[in-house]
Image 1: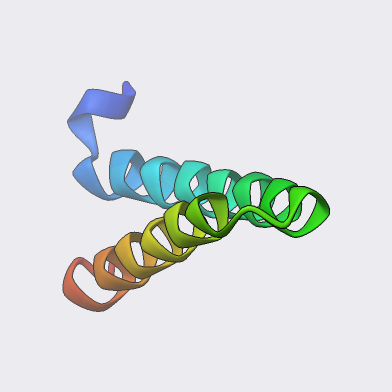
Image 2 (image 1 turned 180 degrees about the horizontal axis):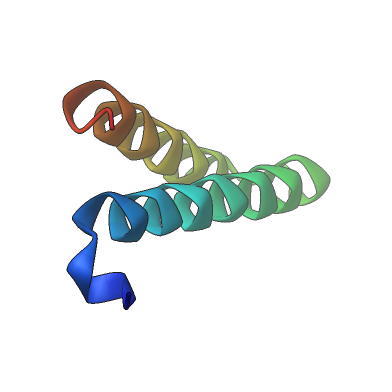
Length: 57
């Protein structure tokens, strides 16, 4: 089975990628005291949360 056959697997990978992006942006934002990086991290977390709530497999 490929990834395109199972949409939940694709959504789960997108969610994990967003969580990793959030962790990286959040860390960079804290270390550099940059609010726009922290804002992007927050939006990545919000998006991952919405995917979890809407497309819960």
